[in-house]
Image (tube, rainbow, N blue to C red):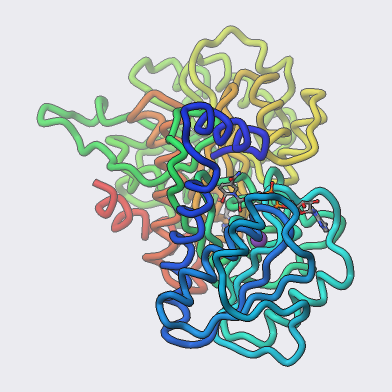
Length: 462
Ligand SMILES: NC(=O)C1=CN([C@@H]2O[C@H](COP(=O)(O)OP(=O)(O)OC[C@H]3O[C@@H](n4cnc5c(N)ncnc54)[C@H](O)[C@@H]3O)[C@@H](O)[C@H]2O)[C@@H](O)CC1
Ligand SMILES: Nc1ncnc2c1ncn2[C@@H]1O[C@H](COP(=O)(O)OP(=O)(O)O)[C@@H](O)[C@H]1O
Ligand SMILES: [K+]
């Protein structure tokens, strides 16, 4: 995944090796035409072309679609402004209109602006896009929906609903942050990457895709598979749900360290109510979860301090993130720590660690660097920051927006941390497992149902 500047640098590096600009544009336009043709299914296509190379891609796609026998109209409110864009326009031999008055069709292709957007869309351009969107059955955005800032996913000079909803967005050469973050996420629809020859490199920002989870080794026993300790608190239900999710996410053994009882306590979950510091002294513990249902009083803070001092790999969620300060984290520990804040907790933590950033990505990175922890910043556009690295995730079921869903995720994270010993890998596996569980749970599930659905989800990922 590349920012605008990185994308331009990657293109420049290709040109330095002798690749022609036209070759890239040609691949972008032809790659787009293949997707558009499938969506058009023989119906008429209207391509809105801007003045730059995004428009150039549009002209190439228009010419390729016309060559396939489709009815294609180009609307170009601004003429091409570069030699390359003019050359692209010259390859399209059909009708070019200056406005979209009365046009109807199957697919509307937005090739107005891409990574070169430099200011908010004018009222006229916004209205033109809205009208063409309304008069066609489906809309496809080339590179990004016009008006979206590629680096942030914000709508430049506007709100999320100033950009209409696209069925498909075709990213050229590399993903941009906007494809998986910010208000743009609501407008982008299905996102697909079109190869234009920009080599994949092991950059700091990447899209995380599900990878296989390793099943237990042949000589595995419950401790090698991971002993998870879930610290309970005043509201026992939340830690109980997290424990259940941890058990179903592959942990060999889950211990519930709780002073409180709960009627939903299952027989296969071992409860231990000895003093917390004693229990945390067990060297076999692979990872500790603290936060769900912990409470926020002095007792809760003492339990958090004990968990950090224990030196075990940690997942801190919910109330632990409300209580966390740099002083608490100052305890000597080399063990990996994963923080799993939602938006509100992230902003509180940024205050507590005295860091700031314009975007969620920048805030999560700054917090990770200030705290030394991996930061899984949850929400509709979940992302993971660890040191300089960022992982984005494909959008998950919106039904995950239910109370307790974060407790389930925290339990999964802890099981994966106990199994892998690596906060970043654990968080990536956990987000995919959580998303997969949501698909198994269907629509309108409760957090308890989601926790149960971790079981079939794990099987999918083996
Ligand atoms: N460099 C290349 O050869 C390639 C470019 N590609 C395409 O080119 C795009 C980037 O092209 P450009 O750098 O030309 O940028 P764009 O085509 O995104 O836009 C730049 C043009 O729009 C104008 N402009 C910007 N914001 C405006 C606004 N709000 N109102 C009116 N005019 C505005 C600028 O003055 C400039 O003429 C990518 O998104 C991608 O679609 C890729 O397909 C791959 C190859
Ligand atoms: N609209 C959404 N689309 C996808 N996932 C979502 C959405 N809203 C919330 N989630 C996910 O659901 C979980 C909610 O966690 P959290 O906010 O901690 O809830 P709770 O505290 O109630 O458990 C997170 O994993 C988050 O990424
Ligand atoms: K566009």
